[in-house]
Amino acid sequence: MNYKLLVLDVDGVLVKSKDAEVSRGVVEAVKNINDKVKVVLCTGRTKEDVQHIIHSLDISHNYHIVESGAKVLSPDGRYEYEKLLTNNEISEIYSNSKSEFEKIAVCRSGKWIDYNQAELYQNVTTVSLHSHSQLQTKKILKSLENVKDTYHIAVGSHWEIPEGNFILITHKQASKKFGIEYVQQKYGISKNETIAIGDMPNDLPLFEASGLKIAMGNGDDELKNKADFVIKSIDEDGVALAIKTYLG
Image 1 (spheres, one colour):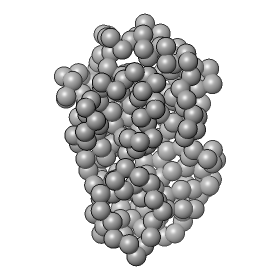
Image 2 (cartoon, rainbow, N blue to C red; image 1 turned 135 degrees about the horizontal axis):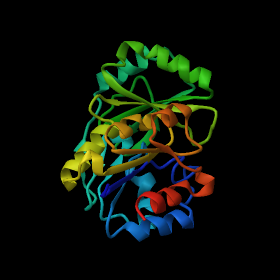
Image 3 (cartoon, helix red, strand yellow; image 1 turned 180 degrees about the vertical axis):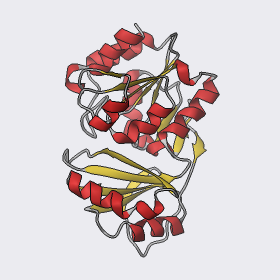
């Protein structure tokens, strides 16, 4: 298969922490394919939080999916695709989560802020419920059973607490799947021509839109079970090896 699109999650795939830099091996591998493959980031991070990664990989000329698929960033820096939550929807999510979370935050106008129940919100794409353990993650997900068909709910890795998670709640049409399908349409690239690399259950929608599904060696078992291949970990430059193997 002649692959034309490589979609990369960020945390746990390219970097291990919020402010970390991409390894030299991965940077070189991406730059070596920039002239023949569209390399696109697909992440729960905001535009501001991925700019240094986009710059280091020299992929600012491509589309990128941010805020868990709620926004698609065009090559000229504009948001071409955007799905927002209303204040009533945010209140509903808060009410249904039954305070099982460690912390609650919202992504408003591209910035993360702590949630205040009394405040009115606009331009919010994501509600994030933080957990400190896998047990707490399960409790949060159970508390959201009543709204699981109303919103898109994804579980991501926590920057500061490896044992915990971010539970990210977005508009029903704001997921990594919808984001990738939008980009595929823009580029005229098919699902079968797309490779995706992820590490956590929130990358399952990303896999749904990809022909070749690759999980990181350091990834979650749920995602690994859905992958076509499991590559080496982030500490072993798994992404660089995957690029050389499937796109070299």
